[in-house]
Length: 71
Image (cartoon, rainbow, N blue to C red; front, side):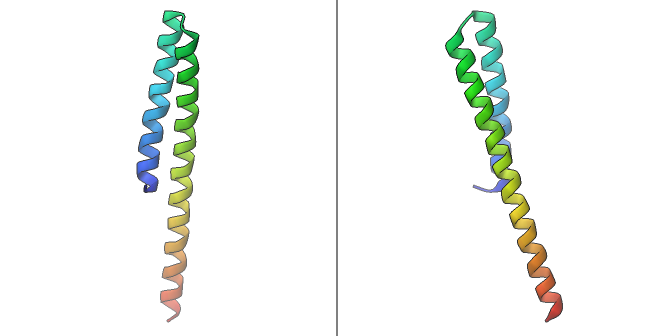
């Protein structure tokens, strides 16, 4: 999965998790609030993974460009 895909899925999971928590709060469902909290944390993790993948890709590209300039 690419960094961008991870960020998109992470954002979606985070938003869905927050919505589940709000619905759980309104409905008085501790189970739904818990599921929402877990999904929100999962989304935040996915976004961080996407950021790390993108940073790695950028670093590799910079190194490759620098190496090509020296040739």
